[in-house]
Length: 289
Image (tube, rainbow, N blue to C red):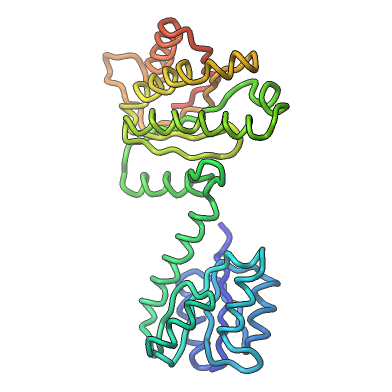
């Protein structure tokens, strides 16, 4: 895993050394800048995960740096934690208005500094990861969700869900039609996943990843199939061959008792029943349990 990069823009050598050592011990790669111009250049050059920015610096002060970065179309998403010896409310407001995402007055506790940096990076990654069309988390969100569940020792199951024939049937139409289809698809997935208190992410196009407890996966996928049958009829009528497809199914633990069929067989059986009962074009093409 690549280290998170942080530009530390601080003209005081003692403070800069203390901050970079503390953040280095916390697992971050720190890049030092000694004035405002260096801070601007280092941020453009390295595109860090966060900028720690002192207000009072030579050549260009922190507020000017923040304002320039936030006006840049590519660098405006870099979160800025502003440090200053000016702790009055007016100075904080000026810093936040200039583009700072958080503000700490000197002297500060290094543990609080590290905690605020983690929170800013985490929030920024979540927002960057969200799909602009559906506002759902993306691949970063899936990775984080899996790590959090495993850390809590939760039994989870994940399944990739998509639509076969989408690119051939729908993509050739007007962009508004394509977006309307994806939104419609996402909306019924959200409804189906929520019924089982599950998690949903959007990887792009019609590629989604759903997660829930292992015991609830079959029931959740029944809801997905029914939702597709009910809501996708208009698209099938317009576009011809559209089929709901499932990617690899992953389960943290075999979730069937010894006297019951295995997880994969029970899931396949549930899909078959739904297929026969609802007439859905559903294809389960790979299972891993």
